[in-house]
Length: 312
Ligand SMILES: C[S@@+](CC[C@H](N)C(=O)[O-])C[C@H]1O[C@@H](n2cnc3c(N)ncnc32)[C@H](O)[C@@H]1O
Image (cartoon, helix red, strand yellow):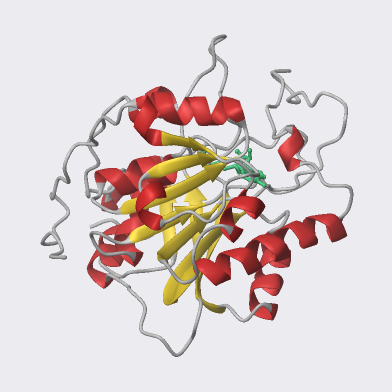
């Protein structure tokens, strides 16, 4: 398929509305294999471990996963030192594991299933914080993934440090790896340059966390999902590592950021999510159209200022 000519002022088509019935498929134990046509551009409400086994081998061009962080927060409420507001961490059941061993097993099983459905030249992005990124990187190498980069996401609005006993954590890492190191994978350097620093396609991206209108809220006005990723981040991931018409997988969809951005950028997607509330949120989200613009959310001047590089 013809790639839209690259320019940071390019506007991709507006995200098209999809009717609710068309978007979600509920997986059942009785269901056998899925054909790609039947699940293309859909969210499967089900368990990724079961669903991935029902998808044919070597079909995806790119995979994005945002796995549980295994944050291991203490049971007590954390309050900020001075202002006393409650720290909203990730305290959901899906982020809990009884040990590192159990967490490693989850990641190993998931990355093994995913590898089976990736084309040999497909790439995978895995995002995590210091809590788990090192474990995930080792597991990926042990499974034979070939690491291409670790892109460091520098947050312009990190969660403040409230006790002053360690550095404020203002980064997340994205491991980018190819399934088979001998294969030619997609890398769109022109986009990498747009999102890098001073026209260099660096492995440092400066952008804010998901906030404001983009952040999905529940009926009480609270964050609907604790780890909703910014569309700006997924836009960069998708534009730098896929072509128009490619098939993208996100088996841990959450609020569906990956598919939402993929659709706007004329890529195809398949998402899987286990939690009913999040699946409902994805449905709601897809009913709202959005315009994804290539232009970076944080301009070069701001990035250089942030990085304390000289501004001309
Ligand atoms: C870190 S969140 C992903 C957030 C997402 N990137 C977004 O922008 O909203 C991980 C998600 O994985 C889901 N999950 C955990 N285990 C799963 C499984 N076995 N199958 C499908 N989804 C699962 C959780 O419900 C959670 O929404």
